[in-house]
Length: 183
Image 1 (cartoon, rainbow, N blue to C red):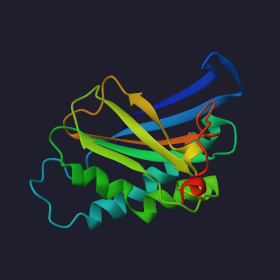
Image 2 (cartoon, rainbow, N blue to C red):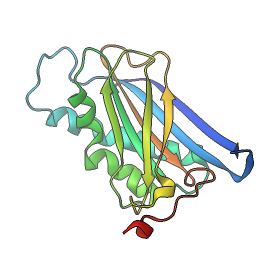
Image 3 (cartoon, helix red, strand yellow):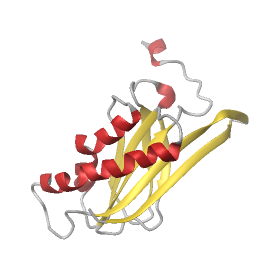
């Protein structure tokens, strides 16, 4: 795995709807930009060797950095893979939709749910939203949120940007009734 750069973003909301958010709502994102392991090979039928060589290392690199950047227990989480224009969306999906990748973050967050994801092919500097869900119950509506991310110079055409995001809480000032009230 060849890493070009790591980017860490911590977003903290202190006021929402004209009212203080106490404690402030924190979301942390850590993104890594790597060479696409399948770049320049044409259509690759078997992605397994590239997955085996890369996915676990990505998860091991990103998960502890998100926990450290957030500085609080993770309650909601998500992931992203943005593939440069010379790659396939499947290349990003191959790396992030594996237990080798995701279990690093699930274990770090003491989570049991699947990580929600966004994946797409795009030029450098694209804006993307990482969806977040509760770490143990994906039906908890207060934790359904997203975080907007942009890494200005990534991904290059032969790269993949992979990111993990964690939130210390649900949406600031959330007021929706529990899902059970509609059933």
